[in-house]
Image 1 (tube, rainbow, N blue to C red):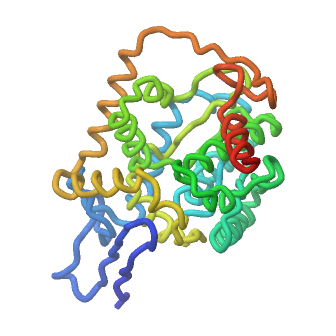
Image 2 (cartoon, rainbow, N blue to C red; image 1 turned 135 degrees about the vertical axis):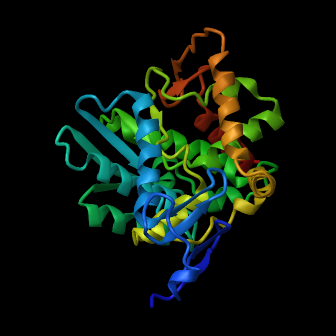
Length: 331
């Protein structure tokens, strides 16, 4: 008899349960085959075995990827790999879907934000996944690019949380690195939970303009288009996928996450999802409908006067933050 596999993915709030096989009478079967179920999807009402569950994840990713329309010919994809379950699984999924195609090249890109005791472990996990797949792995750091680390930003006692600084600098460096690699797109491991949280955060802040910027693939000079193949896959399912595929990933959460408003929104949505399965999917369906109503608008982008990176008003977000930090240090 196979033992049950139970546990919790630390830092992600995910519990998983793969039932044991004590006897035919107590087994829960897959709704699509005679195999043993490893998950029950409350939002779909289906029990799925390991094979059909993984196929379901691949199906959702394929459907999202088709909407981007960039895999019809030769392309180079920079996959942002942090070493966590989502981005590591994303690299495995993209390799599974396109590894046989000679005209699709995958590159793993990791950003070292400079978070002592946390980032070294995740970078090692990212390197392990890329190495197992034979994918080139590129690591770039905030320290080398900007002369500052997230730990230094977090220790300054600023009113903004460290996530505000880290997120802006990380995105800017990821875009710059992908552009230097001549990538046709940057693939990120944002799952359904991440996307629903972002939408809700912008609702709460009343930031409609930023909400519209979440639209898939925008052609903007200097900006490498971003794609999110996992935007329809719930976080807990990405955790189970990584476990079933034995993908190496780091389970520790960023030490600064508790200081972000996103964590509060995450807890709120998880409570709603538990009481009303499908809530996160509903949020995303509503967001997609709102995007369809967006009036025509041109996004004027100019080169930043400080670093020449894309900017909407002459000075990019990264340079504005760095000038703020350096101004505070000079006081």
